[in-house]
Image 1 (tube, rainbow, N blue to C red):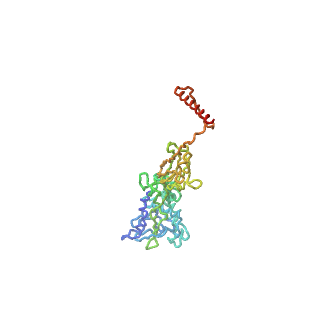
Image 2 (image 1 turned 180 degrees about the vertical axis):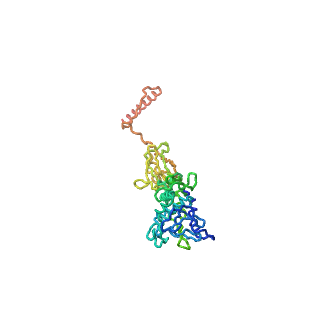
Image 3 (image 1 turned 90 degrees about the horizontal axis):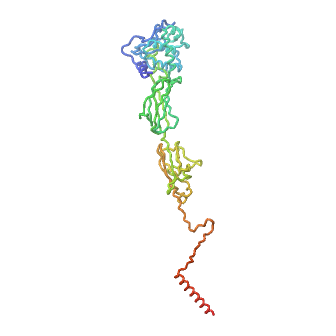
Length: 464
């Protein structure tokens, strides 16, 4: 909407109003606008003029209808909030309308827009209210109300068409505007892109269209590596989307946008009270918003394989406890909670048929250990419950840590006795005999027979 271009001139009656130049221009020098075809009853001469004035070579806008126009020989000073001619505060929506219109149209070069702006200013600031009426006592211009209906019939139709247009513009776009920054709701992963939003909303809860919003990132960057930039709201006022990559644990965004001021600023004449006041928005005001969240490294996983030290085959059904580096306290899950079982102790898992077990969604970086709980069948001999087999390692972001745990099988047992037969009886040894006699063997046997016979006879003789 060209706010920066407008802001430089919107201060027209704020920056140069406090000093009086050495040479003064004529009283009530008109700027651009239109004269009404007649002046309302009881009004002072010149009240038919609807438009800007030139004060100290500046285009200015006035309130306090029917009083003399600004005199360049009279200095002005900033006052408080703009009040009605009756001394009452303006309704917030009227104040916002005036502030927006002065910001948006104070630099206009259109006589119709200038006249329309003057008509609306007088309509809103000098309505009939108590002593301020259409027939003031003694005809005092300080108490003369502005007859909006009268002038609506006396100003050119093009001016009144413009009145309707710029009034609708003010009501649709007036302040206060609200700037909001929103971080993603889901947990963020470092080095992963996420979408943040910046919204600029008007008083009617509709978004400001095509509005630039500057932003700065902390612990985050854009895809091109930049840490600052400008986003623009959509053509229908949709929030601007910013693609952000978290680079640290506390990513945040700080946004700044321009907005019309909430209230106009009024300037009073210093030397006299019998003169119109000048108004200005005070220019744009800066809106600020911020959002932040947290981010973590990508989760990791650990996969352990249990194998036989001799056969290198996998071992199924082995109970393993998942712990931190100290092999006592539990490991941490990605959400920073403890990885425990239903008993509140470090989680115990069992290897599957393939001898492996995997633990996903673990915080990184983190040291992880898997400790054997009990020895599987056939491996009890070399299991020491005071120093059970274990394997440890460090999890890296987004990676799977592979660990291997080896078990030594029991020693084979050698039998010390001959085992029983299949039928449970002791086996009986059998022998075969050779019935064929050789000559040498026969002589030896015969000698032994004769010797035995002689010995037997000797024993009989001795006994007799």
